[in-house]
Length: 334
Image (cartoon, rainbow, N blue to C red):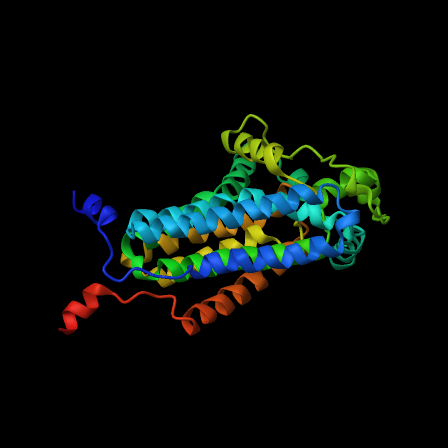
C-alpha cells in the first residue's frame, strides 16, 4: 500500500512552471510553426498541421494545470506519459514537412555502395534467412518502445527526483532527431528500393527520385520469417505508422543508445537494467539494417548522435536544475 500512498501524496515543493521536457515540446512546436509559415503553399494540409500543434499546446498546458491543482506523482507521470504517447503523432508529421523537399536516398545508397561494394540492407536478410535469426532481429526492433517505457518507469519508481531530467534528455533527443528529419528527407531502403526497383539497387544504380515520395508510400515487404510472433509485431507497427521519412540518422539506434546511458546512470541494483538493455541494443543496431529500415550509415550516425544528444541534453538539464532534491538524502544529512 505504501507505493499507492506515494502515488497520490501531495508534494510539499511541487514544480511551479513547465517541466523541461514540456519546454522541449513547445520549442519544437514553435520551430515547426515557423517552417510551416514559410512552406505553407507547398504543404498538403497546412491547416491540419497548425491545428494539431495548437491541440498539443493545449494538452500540455492542461496537464500542467492539473498537476498544479493536484501536485502528486500520478499527475507528473501523466505529464510525461502523454508527451511520450504524442510522439506517435510527431513522427509521421516529419513526413508531412519534409516531402516538400527533394529526396536524398540516392546519395546515401551510393555512399553505402562505395563503402561496402554492395547494399547491406538488401543482402543481410538473404544471407541470414533462418527463422530464429529473423525473430531475434524482430525482437530487437520490437523492444524499442518497451525499453523507453521501462527505463522511465524505473526512474519514476526508484529515481523520482531524476525523472524530469531523464524525460528531458529523452524527449529533447527525440525532437532533435525530428528537426533533422524535417530538413533531410531520407526514406530508407524499404521505400527507396521499392521506388527504383530491387534489381537496380542490386546493380548499384541509384537514380534520384526527386519528389516521388511526396505522393507515393510504396514499401517493400519486411524481410524475415513471416510466421514469427515478433515479426508480426514489427509488421503491424510498420503498417500502422511507417512513412517514407526519418531514415538518417537512425533514431531507433540513437534513442536506444540514450536509453542505455540512462539505464547505466540509474544505478539499479547490480545494474540489472543496464545489462538487460545491452543485448537489445546490439540487436537493434543489426535489426534496423536487417528489416531494411535503414542503411548502415544511418545506424552508425544514430550511434554517434545518440551519444552526442545524451550528453548535450544531460548538460542542459544540469545547467537548468531539472533534478529535484532527494528527500531521503536531506533527511540523512539532518
